[in-house]
Amino acid sequence: MKAVAIFEHGGPEVLRGTELAEPPIGSHDILVRVRACALNHLDLWMRAGMPNRPVQFPHILGSDIAGEIAKIGDAVRTVKVGEKVLLAPGVSCGECAHCVAGHDNFCRDYTLLGTTIPGGYAEFVQAPAVNVIPIPDNMTFEQAAAIPLVFTTAWHMLFNRARLQPAEEVLVIAAGSGVGSAAVQIAKATGARVIATAGSEAKLAKARELGADETLLHVGEFAREVKKLTNGRGVDVVFEHVGAATWEQSVYSLAHGGRLVTCGATTGRETAINVGYLFARQLSILGSFMGYKSELHAALELFKRGLLKPVVDTVFPLERAAEAHQRLEKREQFGKVVLKVG
Ligand SMILES: [Zn+2]
Picture (tube, rainbow, N blue to C red):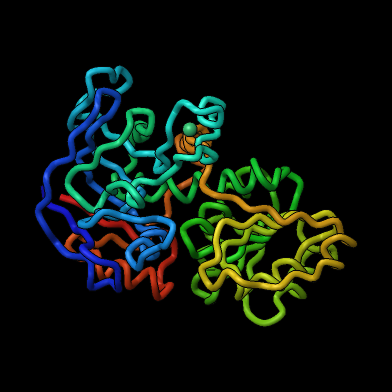
């Protein structure tokens, strides 16, 4: 099969077109003919190399996959060959206490397609049948690929971790990112008042189109602006994934009893915290990583109702994966950068 793989870690130039064997499938697996694969920052990190996530070269990146079922294992009863599907990115053991509770992202064996196992920068990918979800009608493969990782992550952060309520106010940092554009929409669909930040006026305008009630540039002491927009109170929930560059102002944007939830640190992992400010205001700092498969199923219901929509920034052919990586690296995008396969 055709694939774009990495044979070593490094910059975008290590992404190389190649021919690899079609993956074999087990009795509970499916083989998907990949039609689209969306990029995540995770792809950039895996390409550069992550010490705790070893890969076997040649390695195929890509966690967000949509396509058609090409083959099914003997024991698979839920899908048919030819069906249009997307894949939940998280793969877990399926048997431990966390997995049987539906909390698959807590499984000790939890991994993601395209990280320690092959992903979607290829004609075919193998996955467990439990990861398959049919694509709603009237959705393209590129749109479907733009959904799984970021909507699962944002859903888990807002509802499972931060317990967002309809009457609350939420600050979404970097609404132009994939996960930020998902969070704006999910929070808005819930009824929350959404304040969104971005690094440019053009991105702020797009955030308002997605439903943000208020927008502001995340430069300087932006917490002051947040306080002005909330009658001096601050927000109930801060949705973080930027890390060092915005962390301090994100904390200062919280109301008394507020919750900051984070799933990433794209600008740096080390930061300071004023412990006095934390306890005196009874703040909560919450970590979050991916989400449950059931949360992706739930999000897809809101897509069917028209309350959420995929945000596709640009589509590159698979052969131009290196250019797609550069676009994400430079933070030029609003929403998802997607590879079209085949
Ligand atoms: Zn498990």
